[in-house]
Structures are given as structure tokens and as C-alpha cells.
Image (cartoon, rainbow, N blue to C red):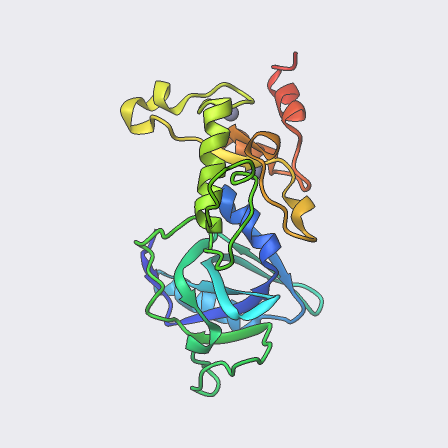
Length: 252
Ligand SMILES: [Zn+2]
Ligand SMILES: [Zn+2]
């Protein structure tokens, strides 16, 4: 796969409540937007001919002055008056980035401040690089009162990135790093190289659609191997762990 990005990128807005759970899990993001992204489709096709990937930049729909994530557009489907797009995975941007740093292809001007633009084609900014994986989640600037700091005697301000890494760590500490559905153990199979590797599945990401609630690592997260994680998401909403186990013939 190529490591080069196209010279132009697509910009859109999505509510961060929908983005964070997907970013935490590391899976594909599928979004819809109420315009037909003909320019995007063309850029993607042109890029493919050159072996380049088309980046999508995502701003927070509730705070359009912030860019949160970016990813590579794998698919753009033009539907009846709208577009469904698939991003390979969501990469959090380092530091605070704003749409005003993006220059529109159409005018050569930056995106105007306070102007809510749900779809635009921009010059690909230099801060996007494929070799830098960045943090898993976009940092949250405000103090957060996640489940982790509950009961803590010291008042700590944890940003969301640290908190969600901590959520992942706590999930694995509780359930282990073997797949809860099939028992696959990356360390046993791949040796030292695979030691400790596991994907973390959020049982109910959609329940976060309204008000963001903090992730309880024991209640909400389960370790799954990459195969089981793909299979559980093969339908929307995802299968339950029990349904997945039943498919594997592992049901108790
Ligand atoms: Zn598995
Ligand atoms: Zn999942």
C-alpha cells in the first residue's frame, strides 16, 4: 500500500460522540453527509491512478473550530442526494488544529472562521503524515471526570486521550489479553512479537450518541482478537459476545 497522500483532501464534520468510540477501537468509520461528493470521488480515482491515498479530515460538528481526526477514504458511495463514505481508521491529530488552517481548493483561501461547512475540498495540510500514528484519541481540552478518577483522593485532570488509554489498559488488566470469544492469544501464536497485542471492543458505542458518557472498562469493553472483532462488526448493530461465541460453537 502506498504511503503517499493526494495533494487535496476532503473536509467534513461529524459529532465527536460518534468518532471517539470508533477511534478507541481502531476500526473503520462509516459516515454519511447530505451532499454528493462528486469532487471527492474524482480525487480518489485520480489518486488511485498515481498510487496515492485520499485523506479525509474531520472536524467536530458541535465545535467546528476544531479538527479532531483524519483517515484514508477507502470508499465513497454517491447515494440519492447524499454520500456514504468509509475511512480506514481514525487517526487523532496531534495538538489543537483548526479548519482555519485548511486552504480551500476553490478559492485558495482558508476556511472562514465560524463558517459551518459540512463538506469541502482543501489542500492537504503538511501536518498529515502516514508514518506518524499519533495518539488513539483526539485530546480533550477540558478537565474530565471519567470513571477512573472517581474515588481518587487526589484531584487529577486527565485528558481524554490518557483516560481512554487507561480504559484500554484496565480492560486488559481485568479480562486478560486473550480474545474473550475464541481464546486466541497473540503472544502464544506469534511469540514475543505478539505479546500483549489485542483489540478492544466497545460493547455499545451507539449508546454514546447523545451525551458523552465515560467508558467503564469492565462494563463496556472486551478484548477481542482481530478476526472476532471483524466478525462481531460484520452486522450493524454488532453481534453480542454471546452470539459470536455461539457461532464459534463455544457457547456454554
Ligand atoms: Zn477471537
Ligand atoms: Zn468493536
